[in-house]
Image 1 (tube, rainbow, N blue to C red):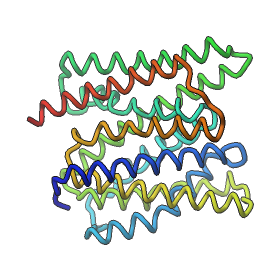
Image 2 (cartoon, rainbow, N blue to C red):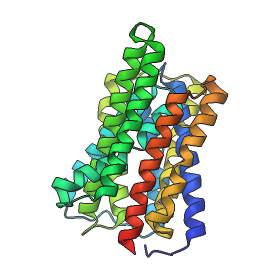
Image 3 (tube, helix red, strand yellow):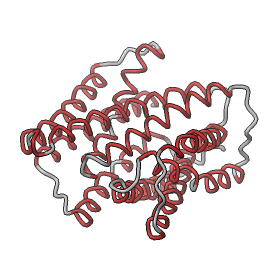
Image 4 (cartoon, rainbow, N blue to C red):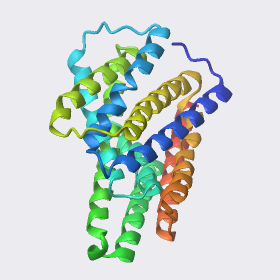
Length: 295
């Protein structure tokens, strides 16, 4: 699809996508005590598949490819990243888990050094250091406030897994860059959706818990709203440049804080707020560098 260069449309699409992903995360967290995160992933993938397929076909996407192995590796890294995100939601407050998701662009910078032979400048190194200091601030603040006996150990595992999810999301991004040399973005999205549905479906019999009707409705909602968010996200990047959309992605942190407070009474502490400011600030430094390079 040709880039429309419609900044307003891109911003609206990204705001909608970010809101969808925040609501999806809240639903996943609400069900995580009763169902395996792998079962939640299956419903996320299988019920988003019709939406992604319909949107892809409307945009003229084709499944024909000569790089099936590349699509499989990209789908696997995407599945591991999603598994880390869903599992960390079982251990962490919604806003903190969302903040740690924003480490992805920092890992992209680090992976680009051996992968693409890039040499980050001072601004990019400053962004990486700032972002990871933010992660440590969030983790240290919770660890000091709760202690291992009060659940701090489980939360530290959650922080590590959430950060690992950022790494695999960045790895998936690098693989998309490789595939994009010969494949359309819609083709990449379609193969990812099909393969991730198949992968989680194979694992499902080992972790299946029969859901109640109210829970089944929420499981379907996870897939549908995740699919809508994925389509809106694709439409956003098809409408405007990445550098102009970056700031809108951080509204997810606001949505997560609001939902966490309304549903679970989670009030962000000083450490979480300070760490989030550092992580978001690091993201803006990365975007500023991208904008300068684009110019």
